[in-house]
Length: 131
Image (cartoon, rainbow, N blue to C red; front, top):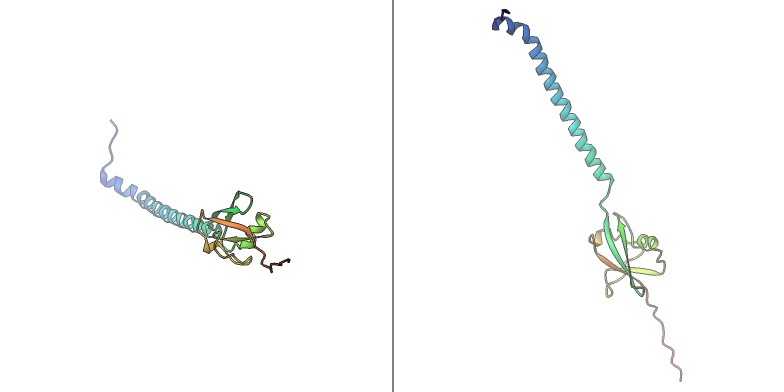
């Protein structure tokens, strides 16, 4: 029969292992919280680096075309028109709405998924009468 050591004898021999095990476990928890904290910080940084894009549908007057674009903060009406190769057009929120200036930022003025209109500016002139 194998002799079983007394509990008091085991307590003295295991104490350094238990203490070092607890220390290691505590250090591992601290390391994990640091790593997780850094992961959260990195994901927040990535979110800041990647601006929220908005999708717009641009109805091109006279063509029946609807062209989809994505814009980011700071995008101007001129940027959208250049992207769509509509150099002689102007953008507006609707047929009866005023045009956006080419240098005007439109990101904050429009909602994601909104439909906007590209049309040519009507020329205003004098009507010549022939008699």
